[in-house]
Length: 93
Length: 203
Image (cartoon, rainbow over all chains, first blue to last red):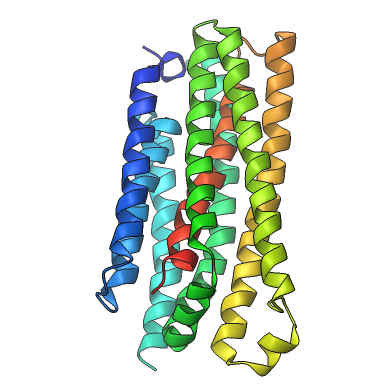
């Protein structure tokens, strides 16, 4: 079964949309609870879950081959280093 | 020695890989802006929080929902094309383009509101206020502005895909163009998924 011919059902797509809406609600709700510095990380964590759903299902990544999966993860890894290391540098000055 | 004949599947995979490579550059582009955000959030936390409180959450949530629905619509249109359901495909694409346009209208009202309150790059209010607030709104305009530009490009790309579905150039056996248009649109949604909490939900 070639990846190109894989069809995602409307039901699955709609289910993902509902999950995304629910997570949006969660992230808005969480922003009303004051957890200090943790709030940003919680917001980013929820955003990452939402992003994963869009990526894996809407963008079909779950059903793609190794090349796409690895190259995508590498890009995200690069981003994590670019943001994370700069952030560390600043935070400890 | 064996020769690999390039198959139709290879071509389809190649087209998709090409689009993903481009998307990676877009991710790094916005990533660079998020580096700035991360650094200045650390250095001016209180100013960022106050800046965030000035932004209208309702606009933020509505725009988030609009983009999520539009991503669903585009994904559904691909399923439709794969199954030869041209009508549904066109509804999906039309819907997502409509969502994009509504997003832009919202952005127009949001920015207009901010500008009328003296909040825009180089405004007196920002130059005379706290540094952190100036930076927060500077980032706000650059990031949402660049994102808005990508929405415009995405709408254009989806419209082209829609035209090709209508003319039959995109069909059940040949829809890489539609898939790639969809990928671009989903990326624009993905970026907004991060912009929303970072600007609108900081308290």
